[in-house]
Length: 148
Image (cartoon, rainbow, N blue to C red; front, side):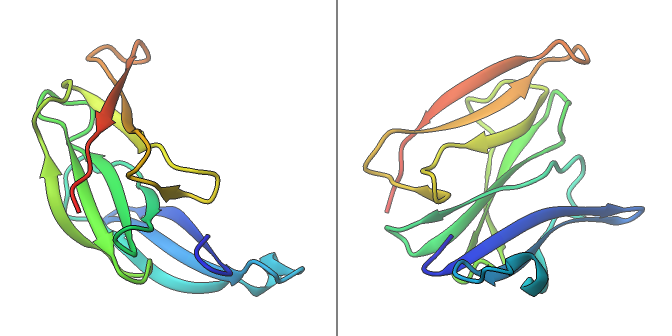
């Protein structure tokens, strides 16, 4: 939630589509499911091999939304992609994190508060499952250091 707006991010996949899409609604709308406003694609991961679903948070200090997801999931070369948006509706990839990660990672997420916001003044964490054996995964927790 940002101000009085709730953001709903959802994964949309098909034969050649891998996207995170977004809908919004006023938090004060008593009939909010009936009044969702669909905005289409927020994060287009279609061209990224093995891209997982996104975890999206708002950073109050930057006044921006940030999204992360794994790529090349469940492979020895897996990594995390970082995206950013000023409005929460359209994201641009700004970085790839490839160091200090376990291989075969997937299903990443990061901590935040009850509103889905990240407060860099409090210790935050990146987490993900990893391991080469199907359904026998470990969980990693990495402390995050933020730069303005």
